Every structure is written in C-alpha cells, then in structure tokens.
Image 1 (cartoon, rainbow, N blue to C red):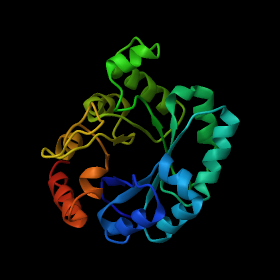
Image 2: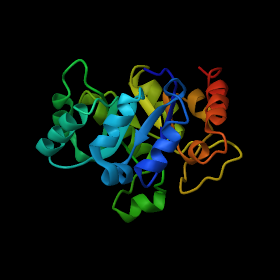
Image 3: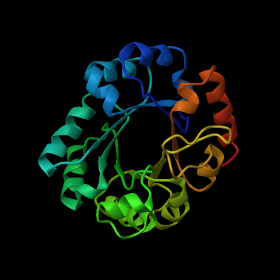
Amino acid sequence: MSDSKIIVALDFPDEASTMKLVDRIKPELCRLKIGKELFTRCGPDLVKKIVNSGYDVFLDLKYHDIPNTVANACKAAADLGVWMINVHALGGPAMLAAARSALSDGDSPLLIAVTILTSSSEDDLKAVGINQSAKIMVKQLALLSKDQGLDGVVCSAQEAAELKTTLGHDFILVTPGIRLPTDDAGDQKRIVTPADAIRQGSDYLVIGRPITQADDPIQKLLTINSEISHCD
C-alpha cells in the first residue's frame, strides 16, 4: 500500500490511454482514482486490473440512491478490492448508515462522503435551492457523515482546517481542485496548491490533469510528493 497523499484522477476515455499512464508511473508514488466516465466505459474488469497492478484505487462513483441500493453497490465495490469508495452525504442519514453497515468487515475499503462539489459556486447552490453557503453546508454534511460512522469526506481545502478542528485528526479529508501555481484552474472554482491543502488539514489530494497531461508524470509526482512532505 502506498503512503503517498496524492490520488491521481484517471480521467481518460478508454482503457488504452488509462493503462498508458498507469504503466508509466509507480504505485509507491500515488494512489489512483477511477470515476464515472472510465468506469462506465470499461467496467469492473479495469478496476481489478489496476488493483492487481499494485495500486490503491479510489472508486469515485458517488453513490446516491435509496439505502438498500447504495448498501448493495458498496458491497459490490468492496468485492473489487478497492481502497476507498464514496457516497453523497446529501443522501441522508439512513443511506449513510446503510452504506456503513454494508462495509462492516475489517478488510473493507474506506468509506467517505461527498459534501459540496468543488466545482459548485454559491450561485450554483442557490439554483438548486440551497441558500446556505458552501462552507456551512460542507460542515453540516461532514458532521452528519461522521455521526453515521463514515471514515471521512471530500471537501475543498478551504474547509479543511475547520473540519479538522471540529471532527478530529482521524477523520479523513480528501481534497480535489488541486493545482500547482503554474497550472490552469480548469473547471474547478475553489482551488489551492498541494502544500496549502496539506497545511490546511487535507489528508489526500486528488490531482488530475497537472499529472496526467504532464510531459513527465513521474517527475511531476516526485515534485509534488517532495513539496508536501515538509508540510505535515
């Protein structure tokens, strides 16, 4: 198992381009995230292939459905041997509790919840009827997730410091929207650098294009790992 805090987002359209990167980098340098597009196109077989290559895999499918359906989906994900899976905290306490109960085995993957997506602006939240700020909503959903026994949440680094103080050191904070100072922000609205995120309390950093589109992904991983190693 890797001890790296970096989770590389495999945002590729097919297995060939995915494995081109996977075979180029090393499990000790990072963990890997498989999201909806890649899973929908390539399915469980690719997940198993990458797990068998020695990588810790975060299966990022953001389950959000009735409790029984989510519980069964979590069990299916666990059978793939992944390191971590997630659900939507907005699914509510019964759904979160069902997901937790489905992963009661000691060898089960980590279970975290999505709070508010880092691509969401305040205007986006208002458009769907959420009149509280992203910061307030993230804290409320994180507290709910911890109360239901989840291992952590996905959050912006901008919320990480307060969540660490409120929820404790052992509650895992996974932060997307990470960019290096020279990188384009892309579609992320609430972004920070890797070092800033670690200093603010993030435990794992989800990084996609800055690594996957780099001329030398291994060197980029080495640089980021070195940068954040002095921030604990």
